[in-house]
Image 1 (cartoon, rainbow, N blue to C red):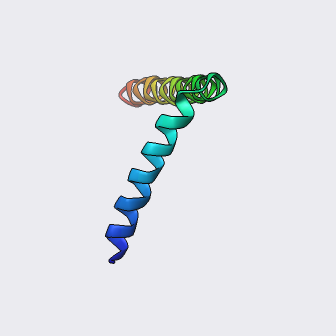
Image 2 (tube, rainbow, N blue to C red):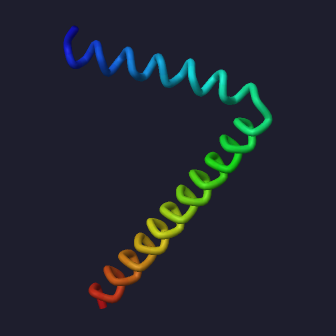
Length: 65
């Protein structure tokens, strides 16, 4: 089996395992916490990007003066 085939097989097994884990109360709690952490990380990245973007726009406006 090729490396790509191993990758696809591993991803499929991971999805099946996650489905079964998510059917338990503890598994649901785990995935809720994981999703919350991912959302917080995404929000922090977006806030940093927008802050840097605003700072860059402000710097370029000052350079034009």
